[in-house]
Length: 552
Image (cartoon, rainbow, N blue to C red; front, side, top):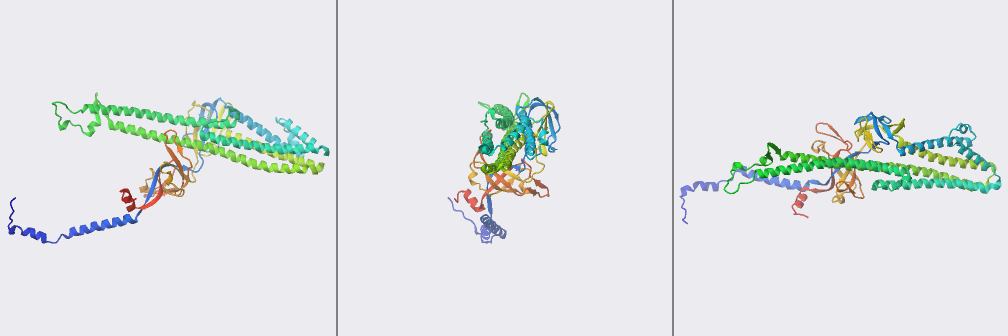
């Protein structure tokens, strides 16, 4: 290697460059970058961010939603309602021509008539014990008239027994005590069967026999409605899946033809750059003059998958609502029976006191006690038959059976949404869900959140929840907020997908937000959302260091 000799006159410029001061702009730039880095580190150390668990959910109104179903099997004769129409309680929705009147409805009608006849004669009988027999004598056409006339004569015959018949009086009053006790036992048995009906609803299995009447019919009606809803949604899902499979076959065929058309040359053939297909050419093939757009096929397939998943979610929610509505109805009946038992227990205490006192009274006092005891029996019977009337009327409330026609009416006021599209002449089976009535306005909302098994341990009651709704972007409207109110104690499984989740109920707080343009955002029943449940807070620096495994 030869040494390089440089003349001094050629080095003058280099020396000046080395000895010159650095450019001020470069110095200021370095300082600015350092300041930005320091500020960024301080911000990451001081600013805290929410650590959240994301789950899908749906908003529900706290007001009750009522389902309208057919109580008979027949064909539609007239329709008076359209989808989304506002209806008032008692408005006629449909008129059905009855092909076959349900045995259940016939039984309820007969029981209702019998219960009303009993109430009418019991009221007149009670007045006759007070000395006014006019009303009782006016009911000679009542089916139970002779029975109560004999009952009244028997009562006074027993009152006129001599003091030597005290033992017989004791037997009479003991029978009253036993009668009330037996009635209480019957109500307890009904409550027991209603609890069994709840389990049948939850397990979707009717363990009652046909001879058990109302309980068998109640569960059978629910199961028929549940299975019908399940089948309707399954048919939609299967149809979507069939179309998805067809598109998969078309995509596979198009891609195979594309690969054959652009196979690389072999042997002595050379391939020019112009012969190499680009991405758009691969995704579009020419076959027999017909252009197959693979990307379009994939998009149509993806749209079908999205539609199928949406129907699957709707199916899950519809079945859950159906079960909840049936359980609520059963709970209301149990509550009513418990109230009746409390009243009967009061009468039982009074009857026992009368039984204890019967031995030490004179004949006049005995008559008074006997009449009071009989009035106690009447009161207990009136409660029983009033309960029976309420039970029958509740079932028959939405059905007006006249001249081989069933008039389906709205049982509450609200907006009617059709579940089954009916036209004149359409055939309807007993128990088929026709539509749903939603309340005119919701007083408040709550959210049902479906939390996965892997995240449920992080969720606690009282945690803050922020809702992201597609219709109201958070960047424009902010967040709807709420707090965790209740966490399911047991896991639920989606029967169609097999996915397991815990149902978390969130109490919603701010139900109205305004966007940047002043437009108000309001929640609607059934609106889907993504919930962000805040489980912790961390500063940005700690979060970043944990993500790159520099901190445990």
